[in-house]
Image (cartoon, rainbow, N blue to C red; front, side, top):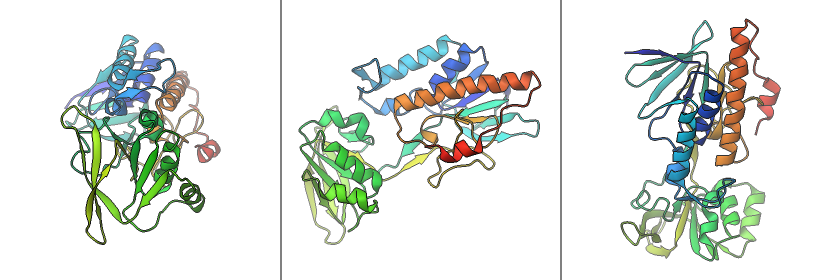
Length: 330
């Protein structure tokens, strides 16, 4: 077991983590970014990005590579294949970030940018056609399906709202739900039922996503009615899955304020209810979860960390979180 000392530890190397690493490095802070997989986060699951300012069309992995190079250029150390087990605050105000092999990273500040994980259907073809028809983000990928017939899976607000949104592009949207009623709010349902481009398929689950084979695109999905057992193939060039999203906040030890869904509450400086613990990107409460919002959060968090550490170094009281702002966040 080894021990390492840093000014700031950043957990997660998605867009928020790499942006925070770049700004922390520019501030001459000794910075490490810990990533379970490869740098990029959900960018690596997105084939093409057309809504990041300055890039009308860029591949997901290409943008991830640019983010990574930029962070490293300004001094951030990025460690990959590192699984964080726990982050705990010690009595002296510093943090221990402990990883799977027992190594400990000590720092006076931590930025959590671990993102979140869309809940998967876990059916055959879901992984194979990820980015080739399978999507978890309507805003990100909807424009690729102009004039197409596509599917949305789910029954909550997200599924119903995104099905309505996707009709801006798609000619036809099938909304597949496993029950005979939605969990979405009544006003959202009213808009959905009033949209002539949407047809709801009740009491039905997706059993398999199929397409052109290796390297090809999705062409249809196999669905089953849970009451009758009847199966059929539903032609569709895209499937948008909205059956849940889980923020990756389970590594934090101690009480930290969050909303009912588990997203972290922060103040305007991205500081959580634990002084010295900051959050940016998809782990925190906010209106939308985009690359642009992630890097905006991260910019604020990294600059706030530098000010927090300066106050500690000079013997001043470090800025405390602002509870009223936290409760209004998002």
